[in-house]
Length: 257
Ligand code: BO1
Ligand code: ZN
Image 1 (cartoon, rainbow, N blue to C red):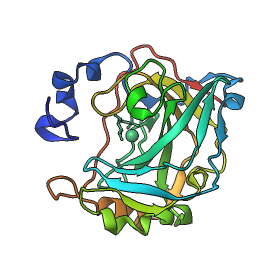
Image 2 (image 1 turned 135 degrees about the vertical axis):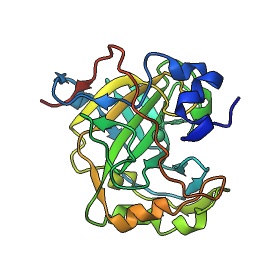
Image 3 (image 1 turned 135 degrees about the horizontal axis):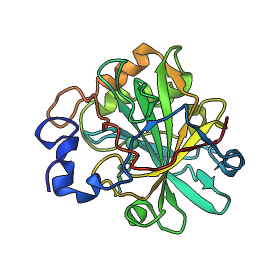
């Protein structure tokens, strides 16, 4: 198995040699076509956030794993319900970002990318944890949120103020739990839904994607903190996004007109 990366000899175009699923037909991310929308009136009411707001007991664990910044939300008991009966527990959140503001997000909106993208990774409650669920059918639900540069976002400071503690690859660093809902845009009612995959090897294609239409704003200074993280070689950890993948006839539905 290759030691995969986001560029060079072990970059995205080489992943499928070691991880064949990466060349299957329902891969993520995608360019979301905004003009030929498949509006599904029932979608909006089907997305439910539970306990996304605190009790905020205990700690979260933040880690630079060399590929992304990940925050494990062990005590959050947050869950997402898709289509009424399918419930998913939040395992962690992580980010994808660029070296400049023109690139960084994994999903594109009609050819437009954003400087960063936040992923809330959930597993189906039928399974014990993310590791058990990771390769099972219908087992994963990832919520994607676009990040734009603008005003400073105080919710992001809840973890960004500790970011210097995880500058290099390493062990998790405990941070006080915070309200994960505060990282979402005000309006979570407008979103896209499609069937896709993990965006990194092994690219398991069992992910129900929900991508919010409204972005959140962080300041340029806040975004620079992500860019100051370092990868396994001590280089700037930036451009940790996969290029968009073919739709291959998949439909992307939307919760709004
Ligand atoms: S993503 O949301 O499509 N970018 C995505 C990509 C890969 C994973 C999760 C979400 N895989 C990994 C997690 C690890 C976790 C492991 C379980 O799955 O990033 O944190 O432990 O085997
Ligand atoms: Zn991701």
